Image 1 (cartoon, one colour):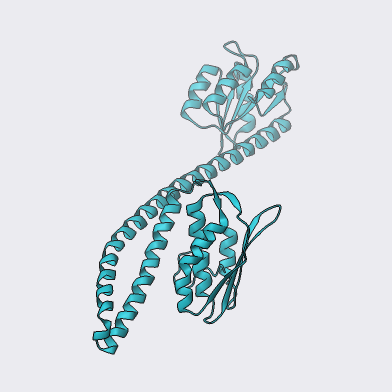
Image 2 (tube, one colour):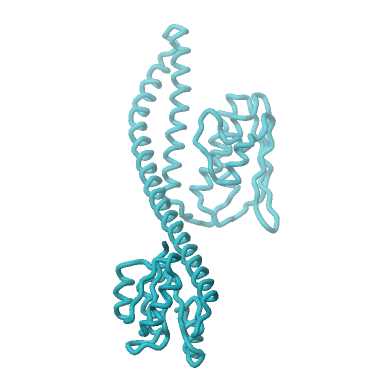
Length: 329
C-alpha cells in the first residue's frame, strides 16, 4: 500500500484518521512535527498530512521544512477557518497541495487523499523518466566521444600505410610501359582502389573533425570564390569522364560563414554530383541570391536524388555508405 504520514498533536484525531484509512494506505502517525521530520528523512511518503495548530510549530512551518526534505511528497494541511490567512500564504508559497477544513468530511478527505496520491505518482513517474533520459543522454555522449576517438585512431593508422602504398604505386606507374599489359592493368586498378580508399579515410577525418568541434568559426568570405576552388579541384576528374562543368557568372557574394565547413560541404556536393552524372554530359552550377537567402543550384543529367538521401537532409542523420552516396546533386 502507498505510504502516507499524518501529524497532529491530538491523539484522538490520529486514531480516527488511522481507522478511517485502514486497508487503503500504509499510514504512519506522530504527534510531534520533529519526529515527523525524522521519519521523512528515512522514508519516502506519497502524502504528508499536517494539522495547522500544533504547540511545537505550525503546520505551515512544518510543511515548509518537509518540502525541503521530500519535495516530491504531496502536502495537505488540516485547518480551521480562523487560520485561512496562513493557508493562503502557504498555498502561494507552494508548500501545500490542498487544505482540508476541520472538522473534515470523511468522503471529502478520502477523495483529497486519493487525488494527492495520484499527483505524487505522476510526479515520481516524471522524475524517473527524466533521470532515465539524463542517464541515457550521458551514456550516448560517452559513446559519441569513444566513437570519435576510435575513428580518429583508425584514420591515423590507415593514413600511414596508405601513404607508403601510394608511393609504391607511383613507382610502378612510372615503369608501366615496360611491364606486361595485364600487370599495367592491375596497377591501374590498384591505383583506383587506393584513391577510393584515400577518399574514405578523408571522409572519416572530416567526420571526426565535425563531431569533435561542431562550433562555427565564422568569417567574411566570398562564396563564389569557395565554389570556384572546389570546381577547379574537380575539373581533372570531370575531364576524365568527359563531363563539362559550366558556371553562371555571379557577382562576388560576401557572407559570414565558416569557410572550412562550407568547403567540406561543397566538396561532398561536387564529388557526389560528378559520380551521379553520366559521361559526356554537362553540369551547370550557379549561385542565386534573393532577399532571404543565398542558394547554390546544380543542374545535371542522370539519376534523381534517392528518397533516403532526402530524408537524411531533413533529419540530419545519415550513415557513411560508400556504395551509395547522398546524391546531393
